[in-house]
Image (cartoon, rainbow over all chains, first blue to last red; front, side):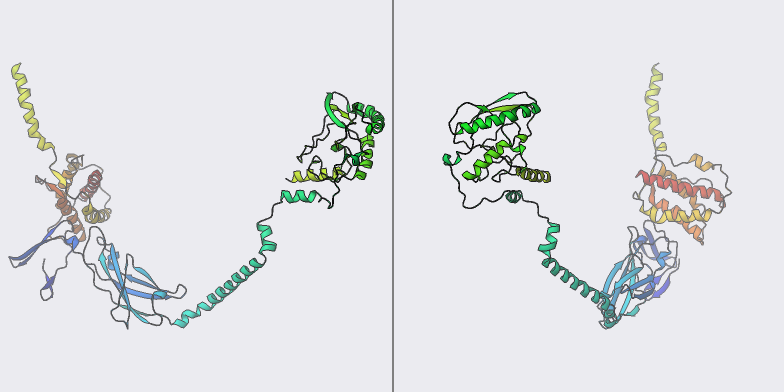
Amino acid sequence: MNFSKLQEEKYFIKTKKFLLVGESKICVKLGEETLACKTVEIAHLVKPEAPFDMKVIYRDRANDFEVTFNTSHLQKKYVKQLMHDVAYCQEKNGNNWTHMNIFNTRLTLPLRKLQSDAMYEIKVRSIPDSDYYKGFWSEWSPSSHFKTPEANNAEEMNPVLSTISITSFFSVVLLVILSCALWKKRIKPIVWPSLPDHKKTLEQLCKKPEKNLNVSFNPEHFLDCQIHKVDDIQSRDEVESFLQDTLSPQFEESEKQGFAGSGQGHNWPSQIPVITSEAFKGELPFGCPTGNISACNASMHPSFWSPDCRKGIRSGSHMYQGLLLSPGTTDSTVLPPFPLQSGILTMNPGIQGQPILTSLKQSQEEAYVTMSSFYKNQ
Amino acid sequence: MFHVSFRYIFGIPPLILVLLPVTSSNCHLKDKEGKGYENVIMISINELEKMLDIDNDCLKKEPNFFRRHSCADKKEAAFLNRAAYKLEQFVKMNITTDFELHLLKVSQGTLKLINCTKEETISKETKKNDWCFLKALIQKIKTCWNKILRGH
């Protein structure tokens, strides 16, 4: 093959016969005389052809510049993979070039990286980028020039954005102020509802004790009341209706006997059916909830006791048999309904000094209903 | 009886030793990663296949060359070496067209990447316009290259 002279002491040869595999021995001959030979690996001496046809387009909406160029290696068979070096600078700055490496023929330059209203120069070169072909940078492509828009043009885009941002800022501030103002009254009850407090609810149900209570533990004040002490309980199977029929007349008789013998200290036990709290609907005479007699503050007026004692005992149509509530009962639990199988209490009406709660008014029913509904809600 | 056992003991093993180099392959692959094949030879083979695809009147009967030589196991390098020499017969002295350039790249590229200790004896020349044989030869070379690189 014949060389062509490129410059002084520089020759070139254009051929496709180079074997791109392994090492090649290249010799320069002058006539028949071999001047010089060199063994080279041609695949490592690749210098790509320079890119061309560079274009820069400003995109108004994206606010950037789109840079595209072409290279002949896109159509070549062997050296196809290249790395491109794009360099740009301001024309007035001279040689202050900014470099960017890319692997395709398209690049995007955002406007924020460039100065407004300035003239720029841009160019590109290539180098092989594969694990087999290696070599050198190509020559620079012909430069392209473009001008960035003025600052006013950029600001014209912002009024809409600035209006939206200011409006949204003020709306956020207003929202914060309203939320702070209405937090306690309206927002917090919805977001964090208050749960009912059991203690407070119970306090509302129980009436406050009257001030200046005249509490007396002098037995002489309770002489009008029939005090029946319960000694023991005997269980016996009886029909409820039979007990109602038989005991109601018996009770009146025993009542008379009891009243007659209350102040005389008779010790004979009288089998008197005791009226329980279930027989009455409503509060106790001194405002106690059902079953919690010991926890209540009783108003122990002597005048209060005597008429109620008689009234409670004489309500014979509502008599039931059952256990007498002991003073030690402290739970607020409702007494379970007694079965028909009842017991007869043997009481000693002669013993004094034992206040027994035997008169329960219809008003207990009201407290019972309230408490039961409270437990239902619970 | 003694002379019979003498023949078997001292006759056959030397015979095996003599014949062993004939049966064993004396070629091996230099480019084990296959970069030379992927970046140069394979590209030229594809170009040749495109150019030879026009001629579809080839007989299905396998040429004798492939009956005698095949890309058998552990003999891939030897077959490629022999096939490359055969391919060079289709290259003219004055290479002008791209077709001949690709033929040269495939044949000489393969010979560069395969190292054989014993030189191949050139078999009788094939007709240079036997395109059917050339097409089959290029396909066999491609198949054998893929096989030898898969083995590594």
